[in-house]
Image: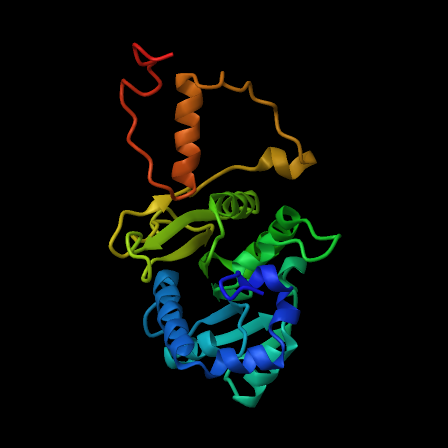
Length: 283
């Protein structure tokens, strides 16, 4: 397989992270450094109370690299991962957190309101793939987000560092997160840098307006999706009222398309009185 191929395209995570790959990942000094930096940034975005130990859920905890950052900052953590080989190494390393073998797409199994926050490093994009015939990425994402929402205390946050393959994956992920009850947005650090650019999905599990202020990305303006969205209709029977579609290429159609792209975190030209206006002399 080509070396540049994305890991999630090569094999399901429980197969890709076999014993060899798991040990290689955990012993790579550069990977350890990057993991530590992203974990510290995710913890910063969680906005946990100072000098107060919190119980945090580490989603896709792997061999416990991200959990070590939580331990160093005085927090208690529990982790889940689908790779038994990754968890074996975590036990060998005697990490401080309790780890469980579990598939995120099947949902969380914790009591409601258990955790003060949740974080995840480089795991969320795996749920966008259908590794089995029974897998439906939107359904698995909804199952994951809805059960995670229940597991979190109201007013807490969940922060995901992830590597989306395209804007469609971002839209699918954020749509299912909002449908499950979360608010929040996409925080992009250093969007103009090829190497330093990182994406964090920062979600709010209820709480006051003050608690729901989305952090600003480092070196950029923050791209957001609405922090409060009602999904009462979709939770009832799974159907929504059909809205009349705008005529293609019309001003309304263009404005709607630009708004969708803004929600996906993409750069879009600002609206003006010339938006959608037909140019003269063009056929």
